[in-house]
Image (cartoon, rainbow, N blue to C red; front, side):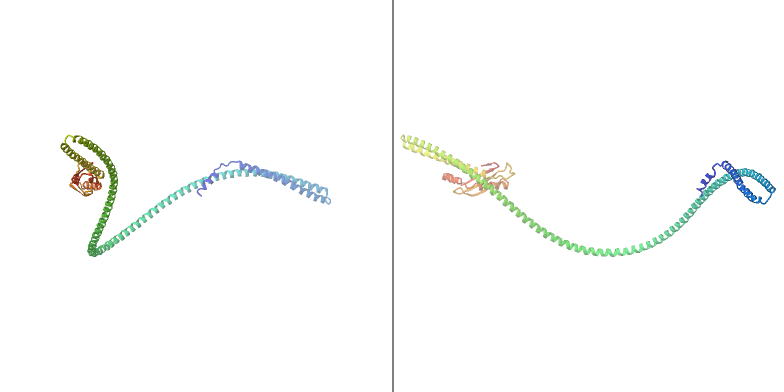
Length: 418
């Protein structure tokens, strides 16, 4: 309703003029004129009718009566016209008065409407002010109620908080009492558990010591078995390594032997060729000497025999020395070819090996008479002698030289055998 009052006030405040009263007054005059015009024709037929009636009556009445009635009729008509004119004037006056009254009423109504509009505006303003006041009062009441509700709620909360604190205090005391009982029970339980734990630990310690003793015995047994197994494996690996080394050594020795034999064959062929040439040269010398001897034999038989004996001794000694040198060189070359020097052998190492041969040059024995201090080096020297044997060239030496070379020494140095 407060929202609709400004709309009503806006309609009532529209300006109202004198156009409508004027139109109403003019309309009223027109109505009066129309009524006057319409009323006169309607009354004339009545005169005719009365005339007709009178005409009918003329047949029975006199002319004087008729004239008198006509005069009366004209008088009545004039009276009616005068009356009608008066009525028309009266109507016009009434219309003007009505128009004036209407204008006055319109003005009064306009004033009333304006007054009503002002009243409505004042009422609206008063209503709005009242509504504002009521709204403010309602808001104030609401705030007051909210404050009261907040205060009531605060008091309730304080009471609830006090009750909660009281309950908490009671609960705390109960919990403290329960905690004291619990601690007492816990202390008793701990003491029981500690005693049980101590007994269990003692029992566990006894079991652990027994298990530890058994474990140690098992570990010792396992360690012993593992060591035995490792030793067996090590020995097997060592045996396999030795066999591999021996196989490799054998193959190397066989290869060296093949090379040595090939070289020996070549050497023998060269030596045979050299001996053949030496023998041919010796034969030529012998023949030359024989010819010289025969040429000188004629001079003196005794002198010739002495010279011939001395020449034979010199030739035999020289031949024996050459054969001995050739034999010892052959042995050295064969041993050098068969010698496999150990890796890492220093240049300062030296070993002396005594060699003993049979009548046909077969090896009877080889031993170290002066060690190098390195067992691998000494062993390689012995293996070189064993690989180079037999020495069949010994049988090609004179009998005296064979006896001298049945036993001899070899000096081993890295890269040299003497």
